[in-house]
Structures are given as C-alpha cells and as structure tokens.
Image 1 (cartoon, rainbow, N blue to C red):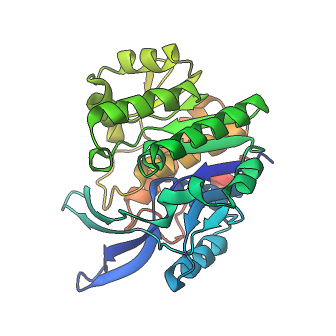
Image 2: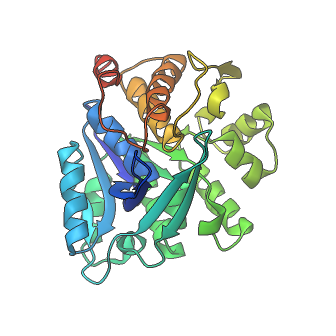
Length: 307
C-alpha cells in the first residue's frame, strides 16, 4: 500500500463539554485530523512534526499511536511544548479558535539536530501532504526545507498534495502568505484549495479562475472545496449527497481531504474521490469535534473497502 507522510502541527485542544458545563482536553490540527482519518481508513500514514519531552507531548504521541498513526517521524524538542487552542461553536455549527502556539515545538521541526534523518525517511513517501498552516508555523528557512522535501518526493516518483487552509492571524502579512501559497503550488501534484481561502489569497471567488490559476502553476489535479455546496472537479460542481444542518463544522475540510485522497490512492476517479470525501466530511459535521470518536454510523468501514 502507498505510504503517506503528512507534515504539520498537532496541538492540545480545549473544547466545550457536550453538557456545556466545562472544557475537555483533546487534540487536533488540520493535517493531524487528516492523518487520523486516513489511519482509520486503513492507510499507512506517518505524521511529521515536533513535540516536547513533557507529559502532554507523551500523551499526544500515545493518542496518535492508538489511532494507528505512525509517530516515527515526530522529532523531539527538549526545550519546548505543544501548542494549545480552544474552540467554540456558533448555533449553526461554525467554529471559532483561540490559539496559544507562539513558540511550540512544531515551529522548530526543521531546526532540530536529528531532523535530517527524518527528512530522509519522509522523502520515500508515495504521497506527501502539507497545508498553508504547515507553512505558517515554520520560519522561512523551515518552509523552504519543506518545499525541498516535497520536491524530493516528486523526484522519486511520489505525489504531493497541498491544501491552502489560510489563517490570516498566523501570517505577518498577506503578501508573505501569497508568496508561500505560490511556492506550495509549484511543488504540488494535487491541489485541495477552499473557495473562501482563495478569495482572500487570490482576490477572486470565481471557481473557473481559481482552477485555472492552480493548473497554470503546474498542479495537475485541482479540487476546490465549496463548503456545503460541494466541490469543483474538472469544471463540474459535485454536490454532497444530502443537505445537512451541521452540529460542528470543525475539521470538515480535513475529513474531505482524507476521504478524497484515500479513494484516489485506491485508483478511484476524482468524482468518486469527491463522493468519499463528502461522505466522511458529512459524518464529521454531524458530531462534536474535528475528529469525533467512532460511532455506528461512521463511514470508515465502507470506505476502507476501496483499498
């Protein structure tokens, strides 16, 4: 089976308890969420990041391993700890985040002395995934090392997927974010942008224009996520199977990425990949949390049959 490496930051997550009385401590992060979904789907997936030597870092490693995620590419920063964020939802399920991640271990991933060996292992991936958040948390030198890793994967015959996932507060200014986006597109085979992010980064919400820019940048396969409307593939809007009233939209795009990439790695057509992505994202938004605990109606078993 194809080996997947996903680069990013996994953090401690504070979320309201279902009863509304207090806060629960969990874990999350855009690319981490995708890694967990792929592991639940039976895919060999390694998460590449940095954690500390503290108790919380140990608990995060254990939790990710319990989900089936390979943690061999997690570097250890003895001087720093994981980032933290709190999440709250509007009545319509829309989420709002507050972050404490200014000097987290993950920001120093490519500066640690033992990272070179991890990069060499990651370069053997059949599929590498990173996002704009992966880039935003890194200093400029770290970003370029990630771009170089992506290029190594491609030179060895692997593919690279890039998800914009733009968070303005993580960037010093719009121009820096736009430059990182262009460099990310330049090393990607699969583009997973979101219309809302593209409107902020490229100044247009026109789907045809967005797809054209990504293809002109050399991205062969472009899937534009449009929230509840579905996604655009090859000029056609592929809607989700049902109109839902979300309970929590956290992690919907991350789940879509996992379902889509899983199906594509199984040899399914892009439209079938979209259907798999919609199915997994649809389950996620009807439950609390970016990666809800498995339930009887979870689609993992059905989608895993695509392998």
